Amino acid sequence: MFTTNPFTPLTLFVSPAVLQVYIVLMALAVAIGTLFDLIHGKKIKFFLQERKRTKAAAKRRLGAADMAAIAVRTLVHDIATFGEFCNNHRRISHVLMFYGFVLYLMMTIVMVFIYPTDTYAPAVLPILWNIGALMTLVGGYWFFFFLRVNVMHDGHSPWRLERADLFIVTLLASVTFALLLEVVAMAENVSATRVFAGIYLFFTTLLFVSVSWSKLPHMFYKPVMAFQRRVEEADGSSGLPAPATTGGDRCPPSHT
Image 1 (cartoon, rainbow, N blue to C red):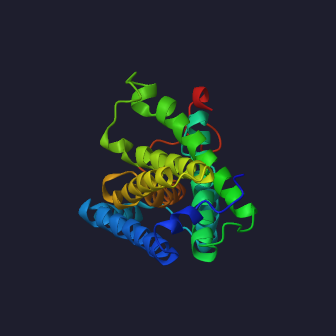
Image 2: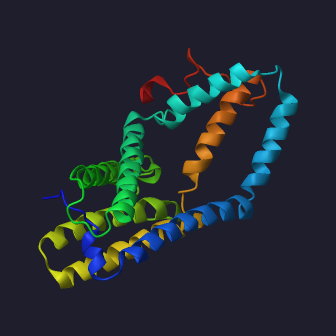
């Protein structure tokens, strides 16, 4: 149980080649959507203008060793462990979502491209796929119901949805129906499998084609902005106040 390829039932309705093309198209949708958001939202223009301003305002020149050290700190603190979040619960939820979804996505690609018609692919693959899906859902539902800003600070109902919630809602729906599809397929109910497969593919498609209107591109912007902020602090061009605590921590004690 939960050790067989969860995508094999889909090959009853579509060929493995169609599933592979579908994944490629979704990857292109993310790339095109992100590029559109960069250009249409004038984010590229903002990044270039900000870089030009900070370069002119720099008080000291950073060498290659300085830049390498900043890149490592950014990777370890801001990217790998989501150190930008002061609230530890929010930080943990994002760690679960990010690493869970990456694991889930990687196992999906491996099973669809390498073992498309093999129900008994190496057991470790579907096990890791399920672990990744569960991590995503634990972190995602925790964030959705308790940690969103308008829910935690403004007292709004978690069911009150805004445009900013498009990514988390489609992500949770896609992964939830992926697990439900797996369970239904185990019961060998062909009609139910078709229905859940359709719902799963609908929300998965919506997740990736709605990039220009969701917060998904922020996953790509935040590392760049985090690196730039650390560069500005190091070369003296930052317009932000200096950290109030030792070690550059901007989080108040109540949030750590």
